[in-house]
Length: 415
Image 1 (cartoon, rainbow, N blue to C red):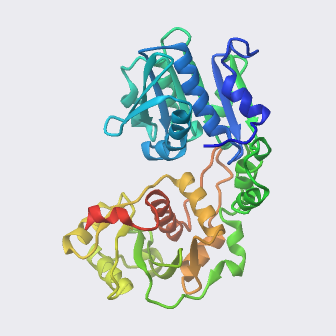
Image 2 (image 1 turned 60 degrees about the horizontal axis):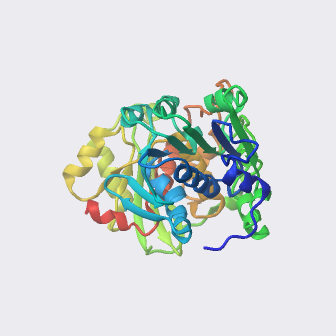
């Protein structure tokens, strides 16, 4: 792997812990700012270089929102660089463990997921000499603080990386605003700090976000959200006529409700784009009559017709309806990822770059796009829990294809 010249902030990230550095006595490094600003790879390399220079036979931790995201965003890009630098790396995928050897030393690097409040228990008991958090702002405070408490070895250091969130976020208040108190070095990155990023790629990333997400991910600002969740969907050009069938693949996403509406979308893949070609939307309150799970299942079969459906991505809380679908044996069922804000980010990007397109006949989706709002009364990112049922099922679908890829190779396990 070849690198262009490093920017000043990238170089500082790589060597801040060196004894000749003016920051060598700091206990932590915090890197935040824009996407594609070159902070993640430099931070992860710095973490391993520092660990191998400082310790032997010690344990360290890489922490991410999920193990999959950690491998994709941090480990996979880092390993070939380490090997180019003559580090020996043994990876045990089943144990989520990297064993790294260099300079006559060997250390263990464990991979941990900080996805929810229960994750704190996963890291209890281990003694660490240092820890790196990738996307720390997406992790619960309980997990982060438990991981920090594990770093009881003398000289241990903390490495933090994140994109900005809302300004009352605990990490912003407790670490970035109190960085002097925490004895932490703070480096704020923009795309200008990544010399390897071309102007064409900068324009591409700038086109993927709007509103508060643009200010957060492109400008690198910790700002509050307000107004419409997807303001760009007010443009009629964001919708299209259903393309000709057949499609390459079909899938259904579902947000289930008994009193609240049930929303299901039929998706078709064509030439790399997923189209929402049909939908089912039943609002028991407005109709004045609830439907049973069997009646919703009948609606699902009418929505799909004779098409071969790879899977139904369904609201994870819809246990009774999930059981009905499975009992009939026609469709594979996958429980949806229900991280709301992360899912909104992914959906915003997928809609703007036309990876996902809503067809004009999906009128309930179009209606909800115009009404779906941020809750400005809350001090943190939160959507108003109204007009969000098609929004939820679309988010479930986008979060799934973002996690597993458009080829649906993962479906083999469900067939």
